[in-house]
Image (spheres, helix red, strand yellow):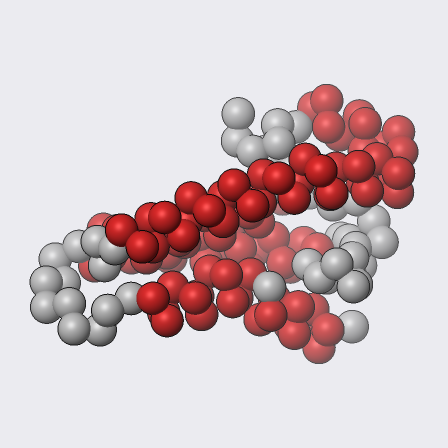
Length: 149
């Protein structure tokens, strides 16, 4: 199960938050003055993302991948403050990349990813959670905001 969790992390949030931005950035950027500003959200977002992946594996008994979802509703850790902290962490990382490289394409990518996350949550994940976890999900949904507010 652990190897599946690592693979799911690398394939899904790893690709969105790290591989794509690294393919988009321009390595010829000489001005690195914004790196320090961008490094803060990249670092914080990475720590939060790994924390969420760990909670999915430990408390949820599953992975972040749709093909091996958690068997239990994850309501610990950062999931006490947001129903989607993993997505919040990825967006934070993307904003860090965009800031570090002052990259309009990365800002656009971050916005598109944020919109895609929102649509996925509203139209796919939340209906699935309601069907799968029933009353536990409904109670959790009333207590915890979808994002941060």
